[in-house]
Length: 128
Image 1 (tube, helix red, strand yellow):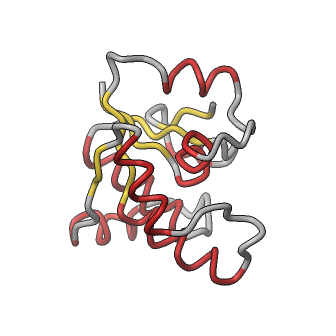
Image 2: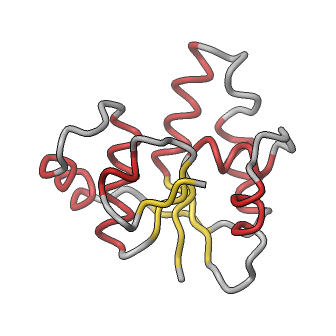
């Protein structure tokens, strides 16, 4: 199984923040699952940290390095991913969340998130 990890979960998993739920921790320790982070998450970290550094504990370069060290694989954003955002229902307004949903859907992955709104996109989105 392949899982795309949303930005906050990925950060929390490598920054020892103590914010991961028990369910998220158990899933992220499962050796049978291949975990991915999106290039869009790195972009999100760069933008949001510049505006609110108190909310994002690590910078974009550091996050990328930590994700790779943790064994996450990088999922690039393609034009196909970007174009498919247009067909998503307007359940969530955040463009970063919407591209993650599109990527997971197109790539046949589960999207792991802490956001209670995103599971409205379908069973492939798992709130943890």
